Amino acid sequence: MSDVISNAPSNAGKVELNTNGKPVGTTVGPEQQKKRLSTFNPKKRHHRSTAAGKGNWRKRFLVALADVPNVAAACEAAGITQPTAYEARKRSQVFDSQWKQALKISVGKLAKAALKRAHDGVVERVWMKDAKGRPVCVDKVRKFSDTLAIFLLKSHAPETYREPPRELGAAVKLPDGTEVKTTFDLGVEEQDVP
Image 1 (spheres, rainbow, N blue to C red):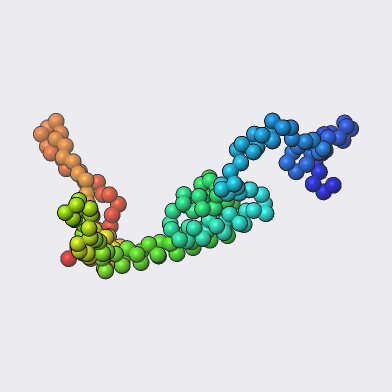
Image 2: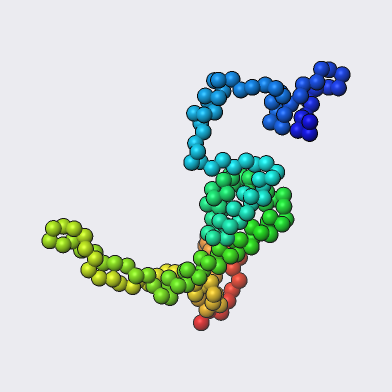
């Protein structure tokens, strides 16, 4: 048998195990069958982490990650845990590269949506109650996100819109009455801001 594994020493009586680690020829008792059936949910997708199934979850993961830059959501879509994804990324340079590419695609989609929202705005309905107290749409207004526009400007034109660098400082009075001022650079390069 190709799927039989022996865990016993060669001089002892061999116990044959199947690929699941169970002795060959054993059956599942009625109590175990009942337990298995009680926990089975046909609506829940069961994903096996076998060597053959690895490529399948990776593809589902990458497709989901390319759609939305959220690792937790991509793991849920692939039916795996986050540690499984991060471990696979650490082990495979190819998967790491695909992960980065998927993130790049989804961040691009997010940036496009943010730009559209900041530039074109979002149409929202204005609701009021009628004489009987039921909500009725009475108008539509287009709303723009100034905050989103500011973030986009800072991102795309930092030389003009980034805030000037800040310094932290303290004044210390020495015992002889001399005042010493110190400043701490926060690691931000100084730039000329118009």
